[in-house]
Amino acid sequence: LDSHTHAPFSRSTIGTFFQERPLLTNPFTQDALLRAYLQRHLPVPEVHGDLRRFGERLVCEIEALGRQCELHPPVLQRYDAWGRRVDRIVTCDAWTRLRHVSAQEGLVAAGYERTYGEWSRVYQMSKMYLFAPSAGLYTCPLAMTDGAAKVIESLGMPAREAFERLTSRDEKRFWTSGQWMTERKGGSDVSSGTETVARRQQGEWFKLYGFKWFTSATDADMTLTLARVTDEHGHTTPGSRGLSLFLADVWDSDGSSNGIEVQRLKDKLGTRQMPTAELLLDGMNARLLSEEGRGVASIANMLTVTRIYNTVCAVAAMRRIVHLSREYACKRSAFGKLLKDHALHVQTLSRMEVETRAAFLLAMEVCRLLGREESQSASERETLLLRLLTPVAKLYTAKQAVSVVSEGLESFGGQGYIEDTGLPSMLRDTQVLSIWEGTTNVLSLDVLRSIAKSSGSVLQAFFSDAEERLLAAEVSPALRPALTSLRASLSALMHFCQTAAASRPAGYLELSARDLAYSLARVYMGALLVDHAAWEHATHTDVHAALRWCDQDLCPVVSRGAAGCFDPQTTAMDSALVYDG
Ligand code: UCC
Ligand code: FAD
Image 1 (tube, rainbow, N blue to C red):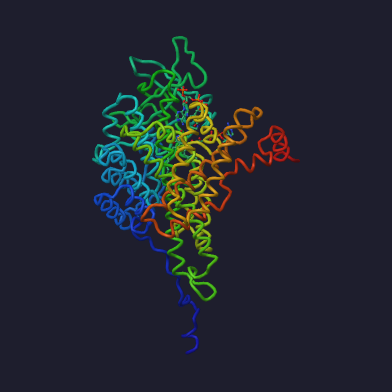
Image 2 (tube, rainbow, N blue to C red):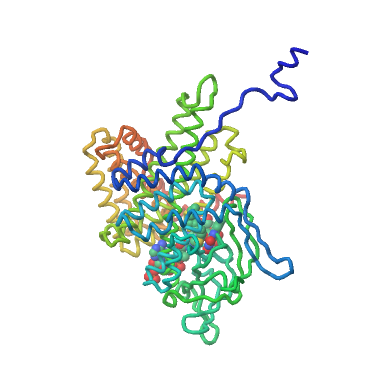
């Protein structure tokens, strides 16, 4: 009987060992690179104080709200108790509280108050970056809200009240916006895929009829959307020249929907915290916002902002998983020692850290450029760089995030695969970053568009800026191997760009687009890493990160080009390979 009482496993005793879980602590104080970056560029005590306080609020309050949103996803209430069609999207209380937090903290407002001049976007996006991994995807409506404000501002404030609400700190006045572009025929090819028509009522007012296939955070107050204006015979103009931009309230003043029927909510791999709906627009009242036929060009400002948010949120996901993985490695033992004392495990974590650092510096650089453009202090070169780097940063960091978060899950072993740790949702939510706001290939083609539209000026801006950064980094002898590798890549990339358009067969550039975008990303990230590591207060870890980054093939467009990957005959072979059998 005595031996039974002391048995380590029995009905009432399930063993004595319980693994300590990884703890989230203040993400601002944990983040050496964010703090150093701000110390270098925005050494304002008020900013550091605000981010430190916000970091505490994230741990103590916001993290739990984000988790609640995951556990209580939105539902569609189609009818009220008396059988009336209501199409109400019911979200949980935590989702509403995140909306209030967003307004109180000025998460959108800070970008427009411009308290820190050209650095205002860096401040705002630093806060967004801290917020994102705890925010239960509330960053998605914020991205579209910010994008809508940007469009209204860039069109000369045609909807002042909407702008003031989108950028308000007052939680009662604060509005969020949707971005309804995708239809069943095409989300990438919006210009041929858009079937929604707009019938003129009076002046700038129209009624919209169509079907929007993906609309996220559909509980928004207003939306921007695209439609084709019909002429007096009911005809429309095809292609992007036929598309115009509209602003519509989602709800009428009496609380009923504005000619919108919610077909259904999407059943998604991730982003489950947030409603994504299919909508029938059946006479939705909307106001023409752009010039007729300038819809795509006008919504491009929204795309710039939402793609920058995508980039910031991708880096934020990487940073969060690294934060938790390194914490866990101090608590979990295997083969007689803590994971942090296994050199191979730490090497894996350090590779994740290098990816995160490179991505962080690129994201912040794009935010810095946006802030300079908005405060009218950007040079011509900076404006060109913003245009080029926005799609480059979005497409590259999205892929990095999927890879780093996936590696991060593995660092927890089996627990990384278990739902109630909260870790699997991180991977699910990351997977969308390369799909929405333009897929990797579509954004690679946008890089080509930016080059063609500027007659190559965006590339000249890129090369001269990167070269200046490398020159400035020569002060640090420890960086020499990285500089040598970056210089070789820069010059090979420049040679590729000079010859690709001129002397290659048709289709060559298109086939090289993805590798070109990757090369631009890797080389520029390298230039930013050495630039940061050459700062007088940089540490040996900054130097180490730069050296490790530059160990890889920085210029896949050149190595793959040399291997014949973009030659015309490759397409037939690729096709034969894909459809073999
Ligand atoms: O997916 C969505 C998700 C919402 C959730 C938000 C979350 C945000 C992050 C939060 C993280 C947690 S909303 C839907 C997103 N959809 C897309 O991104 C569409 C993807 N497709 C494209 O990007 C295409 O390239 C199009 C539709 C933009 C353009 O296709 P076209 O028809 O070939 O366009 P064109 O004819 O080349 O361009 C028409 C005009 C031109 O100007 P003009 O007429 O002056 O020559 C272009 O230069 O638009 C201009 N333009 C641009 N301008 C086109 N793209 C851009 C650009 N990126 N920047 C500036
Ligand atoms: P397609 O355009 O059919 O693309 C299919 C594949 O073809 C992709 O891999 C693409 O890269 C490739 N491809 C397409 N064209 C080319 C080309 N020329 N060259 C090479 N490859 C090409 N949209 C909104 O408007 N508003 C929203 O709020 C919204 N929310 C979303 C939320 C979620 C969770 C998801 C998953 C999507 C959301 N979307 C939204 C839609 C999203 O923007 C589109 O799904 C995306 O832009 C891709 O469009 P598509 O689905 O039509 O794919």
